[in-house]
Image (tube, rainbow over all chains, first blue to last red; front, side, top):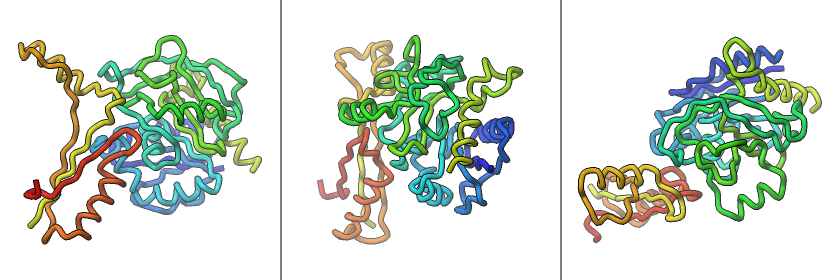
Length: 223
Length: 83
């Protein structure tokens, strides 16, 4: 089982994502933005960071990287893809997920331990969580406010596609406290907080993030 | 060489924290009577030759796919000198 992690110019959390994949028991494979070949990976993580300096819009330029053409095609065929933070922005810009992420409403970079509720545990990346499982993982972002029009938000809620919601205070102005969403098929997930930083007690507030990576191992084995 | 200008603005219903920050600075600097500030992006695109209908249509396509995100932004496009 191989999990590929893409490195764009300006990615920051690619090494942690590879480490999280390895801790979960997968073989982590480094993928390069300029290489359209996915090197036989079974799933892909688009990591956090500031790809292309967030120039134009966060994720807007990365979305046209050669590796993304292959990822978009494979995601359409059911390959699991997880976009974390900047990766979530790339997924929205790629139209693999609806909506967009804009600057935090309070104009500050946020870095904190954030409680969340996992509201959809039927995706490729969340099956190891209980229904409505409450977890605490790191949130660190500048453009973290999830926005979409009312019809899109209603559809996401109606179809159970809100994967994670912020608990306690809404940290960034995201509509309806949405921290993560999935596509109709449940193989593509975008999440603003960072599960990859929360897989070992030495360096994270919890190991609550590990479930994303163990979930996808099962999803791939099952398929 | 012709120049095409694309102005991109966040849709009115989307919160603009950058505009709000600028608005706050207006007040601190004593520029009064300002009700709101919205911040956008301006792209000045210089073409190799004339701004033919086909070339401008290409730039419009670029604006749709890259320069603006229709989920959160609107844009206007004009050929410089035309207005």
